[in-house]
Length: 89
Image (tube, rainbow, N blue to C red; front, side, top):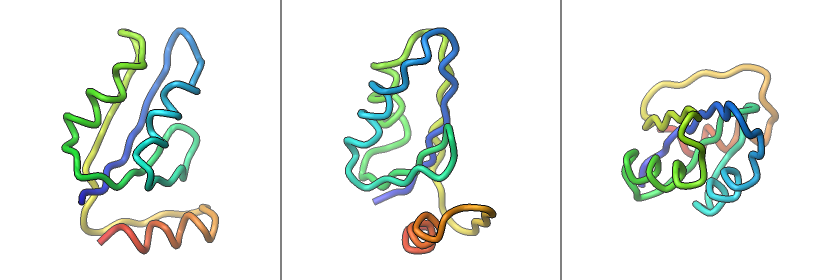
């Protein structure tokens, strides 16, 4: 299983619900910042991107990055901090 950070910029239509539903469908996720999500999946970054872009407009932006190794954060809730500690190795 891999951990991916998902960042997006919906430019025209700001209806985030289809994208959020798609992200949550991965089952194991964390939403640490406004437009940042982290998921755990056995899919590749390309597969995640293709799955998410299916519900986005052509002028929207999407970045899917595999996370591994060192990480640091500030100002996140205890629950999110614990999720990150448990899943980022």
